[in-house]
Image: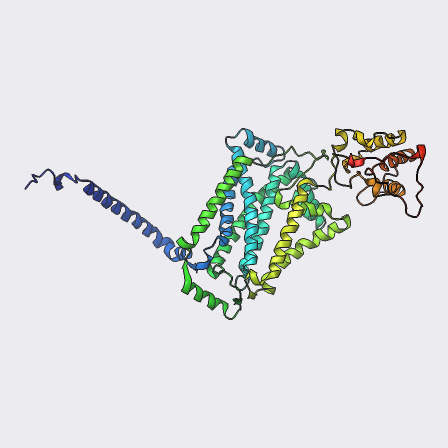
Length: 530
């Protein structure tokens, strides 16, 4: 019998009310969902996802590890994925040849739509990856996560850190500009100092005796294939070890690590106060990784990519190459070292530091984990930050390098030659002609390789100035063969006038002072006092 009530839905014509429509949609979704689950079940039956991968995703972790201190490792992994994606996109345009590498980067910067932004994302992603991995390594050290039974996890992490620095160095070479060219030359000169095999290492590194197209091809293969392949494989091993051995619990003062009881105590902690990694433990990781990605995107948009600074040209010696920030401390160390110490330090320091890092879990694998009871760890980290910070700051402006344009920009300031005698004026001209201001500050300009000339007469006597000019000393070359006696006399006469107003120049204490009178009394020079 037909339904005569128009307010009641007729089953022969389908649903009429909002609730009936919603119910119909829900039934359709349930049906489609069941079909999707059947497909997933069919795939899972063959790949065993629920048995092999799902337990790793939801594996239990100590509740106190859901902390912001545990997010740096996952953020580093996200940066690695960003590097892989942006690197693949860049490889579609980049030409790894000595004649076209620089031009291909210029094409990306100025012609390819958003090519500059892609390069900037790759560049800042590498900077953040090195920084985050450094912080992660320090956090693991401070939390005692290298101790038993996580020795192998620490060793793999150290290798990953070295490979990341290798990726950064080879990536800098890919720019193939002046910085890359001279940085590669410095790296080759360091490799050449290996005893017995130095020349063979350089040949293998450069593909020949000089930096050429073969060199760039080899570094491209290292940067794109060899190092990333090893890096991704070790990342998988590192994650497997973290899952199998377990995430390091929050270090509590007085809770000692012993080989006899630690594993049982850790499992008891997880069973008593554990929670699944997904979704509880991963929440902060996702949030922090999102913040890192947004920050990299903002840096890329605001600061842009780095370089290329200029076509690599070995004939341009008046260049001022700079490595990326993570190599600035190393750059400063080798610049400040005395020449007789360079080879020994290059050959021994990296080996000693790597050996100490690798042996750390074996000579300090048990005992206290908490940083609150390991003052030596605090002292080591603070000293490392201070040392790297100071060396990095010095590397930004290289006070040891001559300022090759200082002498040509302006003459000797007028206040230094005012009321000078003809002999002293001749000395000021020699200072200008011999480019002394390349290495010495005089007034408001000059290099910082040597001490400032302002006030030099208050530090050295006339005889000491003559000896310094003729024989050199420290990092100053000897000018005895480049200046005749008349020029030396004029130069020293000018230098002896460079002392603050109201202060007499230095003199030999063994010689009694004879006060000048009358016309022989010279007015005091203002020097840097103006």
